Length: 110
Length: 114
Image 1 (cartoon, rainbow over the protein chains, first blue to last red):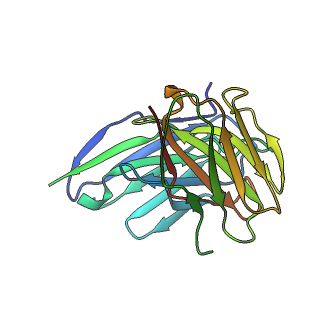
Image 2 (image 1 turned 45 degrees about the horizontal axis):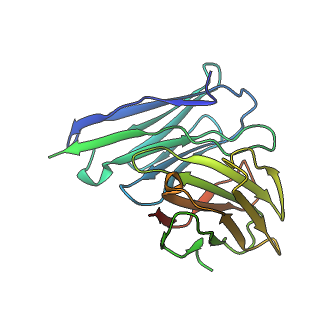
Image 3 (image 1 turned 90 degrees about the vertical axis):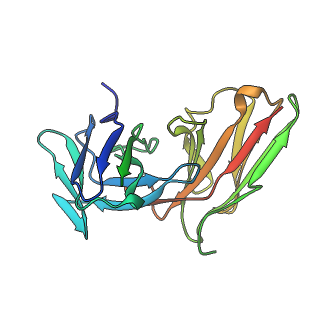
C-alpha cells in the first residue's frame, strides 16, 4: 500500500457546488496532516493543517478519521478560483521524507 | 527573508554540463526539502535536511545528483553531466522543526536540458 493515496480525479464541478476529496494514509503513527493547493506551473501552497479531528477555515473543512486512516477536504460554495490541484501530505512518524499524495485536480466550471 | 527563495528561477543548459541550484530557506527553519516535479506529474522527493545533515537522501535518482547545506541555512543541489530527463522544476521547501510542521515552498527552478 502506498504511504499516501488520493482520489485521482479530475473533479469538474459547477460554481457553487460542494466537493470533497479523500486521502488515505498507511502510517498509523502520523500525528499531523496537511492539505496544499498547487496552481498550474506554480509551487504548492499550504491550505490547511490538521492536528486533531479536523479544522475549518471559511468554505474549507478538513476532517481526520484516525480509525479508518483517511483525511478529507470539503469545499463548500465552490469558486472559479478554487480550480487547482489539491495535495495531501502525511508526515511519517520517523525521520524520513515528507510524502505528498499525487494530487486531485479540481476544475470549477462557470 | 520573508519566504523561501530559489535561484535561478529558470536555467537552460546543454546536455552534459553541470548545474547548481540554490535554496535560501525561511530564517530559523531547521528542516529543508528538495523535490522534483516533471511537467504534469506529482512531486518527487529528492532529499531532506535537518540542520546540516541529511537523514534521508533516498530520493536522489543517481550519483549525478548531490546536495549540501551549510550554516543550517542555504542549500545547493548539484546535478552533474545533465541529461534531458533531468528537465523539470526543482522545488525547495523549509519548515520550522521538521516533519510534523508545515512546510513552505519556494517558487522553484525550472531546469531545461537541451
